[in-house]
Length: 321
Image (cartoon, rainbow, N blue to C red; front, side, top):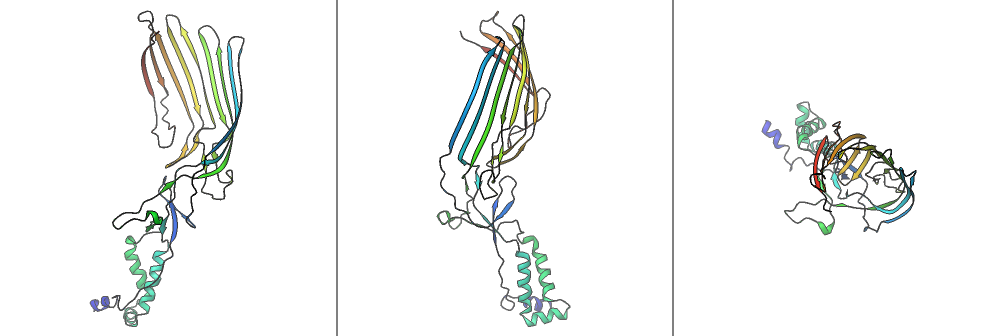
């Protein structure tokens, strides 16, 4: 009896036909997700990026002890070349399971013998179709699993070849930036000097509205902080010994650079160092020792780069005069 029931599911007796609407999606190379899109977009050849910069500055010495340098600038970039982006769409079938279930139910209902046999056992075509789809669910692609790749005709794979994914750059947007660079050196005494510098930029991320683009997926990142500063001192001890220390602060910033997408966090680093002039023993020779990030603040300076902790350096240099 079971064999007879299984035989009624033979495709020649129970025909299952149907259609599941596919959708296109682009792969996000940073997190592996696929975002649905409406259609394939043409990519125009790259244009030359035009950069216009207006800059002004001042450098001067006050009281023979204070050196000040100030630079301000405005930059406009047109047809900026964006990050490397995935352009080959995948084909997804997000409604495959319910569409298959409906087609199975219709096929079973259109086979009177099978439908009557199942009805006698207390099962409707819809219940049996749901049971079959549930049993096969682990083998069916889900809503985010690609089933095909859309390739241009010129790049169509030959038999036995796998389709290729294509990444490309695009020109888009006009970017305006304002910036300020400031540095100060103070010679407090003949042996003690202080220094400091900072850099400020008006923006580090530009969404599609700032770029005057309608595509909400288009965005640019400066891949650099809007604020960073460094300050410290140098002290020359008698007998050729020198000491120095400095602090560095970098404000966090977003990164959009090919597959490297994310946010770099704020970090502060303390560096110390000492040196000794070996000129009395070997003219032109010097020994230096430094520890960067002496507080061992594990930090990442760019997305995709490893975290950096404390770093000690020893250097022996010789200056040929």
